[in-house]
Length: 364
Ligand code: EPS
Image (cartoon, rainbow, N blue to C red; front, side):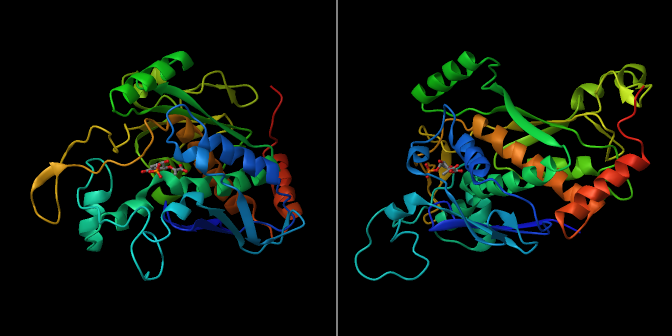
């Protein structure tokens, strides 16, 4: 049994959609819990005024009846309220009459650091907007909605996932983040940062070493790296392990098969080992600068300044929520592969039977 996610939607188009397939029937979803994650994603000190406009309410269009999954594809929709200002510019169909609102003038000055240039060249777009709308981190809204569903499934087998900010703009305290964000905003600049995600309660044995693509660390790293603006991922002590001796780097096995340290971040050989799964992701400074970098006009070939449009100063707090959703998603997928089941009771029963076979947790 595999869990799959398909998403669509442009940042200023009518809506974002997601289809989640492979959920067991009988999983209870909590509307408030999904809404709470979406609210958390919108918050953050450096966010664009856009976040005050969007409400990110999730409409469920299929796969759910009276709060319980049907075992059929779950269809989710998050509307873009801002689309009202882009109705002409982002209309799916040709518009008649005079162009009004935003997005009516072609974008031809790609932003360094964004998908603008590569996207326009790759897909043959004369208007860079045709690339940037989908490349935008706006789409993380439906990833968070899907992640909330994945976390509901994980909760049924005692797995919890939580993301938090470690650093913003090099500062590691909340007041430092705010100061750094204020300074960057005043300077018309942007910031990046580092987030950490910890998942507890995963039994040993999720993922596999059988092949490169089966390794859970590889899948988690790909999921985090797939989030907009993420440029680095670390599992456990990651890069610091490279500078240690083997005698210091590994987590000795104690009675009860537990570890006193967790430098491996809960994964050995691409498989969970029963310790908390710990990951960190590094986000680069956002590429939309109010003090634009040098670029080249794709229409004229002349040097110019990159596109300036309303954007975030930093979105590291949002990344913590999006990364949590991504890790939840990958763990739920690995759990579906391992425990299967068409009905939730089958899934939960297979998990319980497995814990019994490996006698987990063990008393030392
Ligand atoms: C984004 C730019 C900003 C962010 C957006 C992601 O959008 P806008 O230009 O409309 O202000 O607000 O994020 C969201 C809309 C969101 O919901 O997270 C970008 O270029 O990636």
